[in-house]
Image (cartoon, rainbow, N blue to C red; front, side):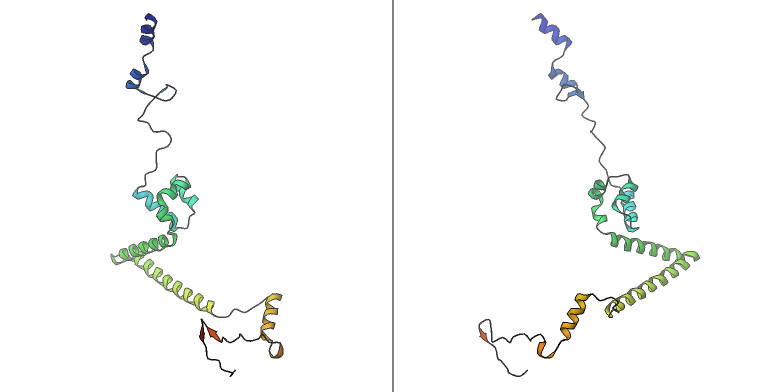
Length: 185
């Protein structure tokens, strides 16, 4: 009994020790207030703006994550809604920049007004170029090299007379209903 009292004095019971501090499975004390690993990322207004600008500038996910000091998975977790809209972000950024430039120009900044007018000219030129590309896409393309397979297909379609591809058969009935058949062709 004396040994047990002496052991309790030297080694307090686990229950008493747990009251004072927390123990892990091996009996080692640890602090419950401290989280293990890196703290989780909290997105801020500044980081959202940074992501929007970098995405609009055409940066890859890896480059954006590197600029923010994040892992690519963390970037996707917190900013997936921004990453999915790369083209939209580019258009929004351009719109905001153009609006700010025109507002500064109307407020009396001559350089901003001059830049805004140049920007509007380039927008008009881009629209005309886009329209011309659309019209050019509808026009037949001059064919340079034609493969042997395409040549054979074109020559087969051009054959007429006795060796021409026969016409599709005429339907006599459609879904059980009689169809009028004409012998004129």
